[in-house]
Image: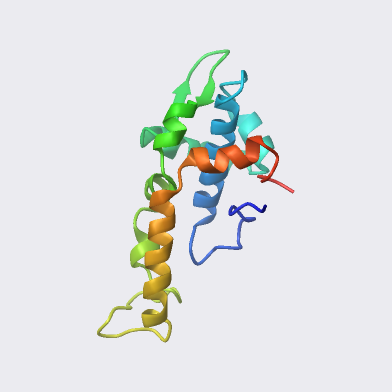
Length: 158
């Protein structure tokens, strides 16, 4: 089994780099929340997801602000998400917290103006893909991804 989370840059047309790091971070935290580790600090999340610390700090702040993960201050502080919360949080929530709705409304070729009246060459072809992506993001929980990571079937870094 392979992971749906690819190296940064692979899905640049779909997910921003920050969003990829955010998905990695929340899945990592969920996997730790299901063990006795529970909470991880910024450095540990960045290390386990092979993400730059500055980017990781930014996305963790966005995920915290959106209420998807919890931040605890102090010497034993860090970031956490419980297994129960991971069952409720969908990938669509993570994408919305970091990238907004651009993945559903943006042009497949990155044009500033693209709609049914003045479509890019991929516009009509991309409509179905975009809808399939929306369904997948809305149906897939963080817990779904965390399970494969915890069982060793998927990976967050190579």
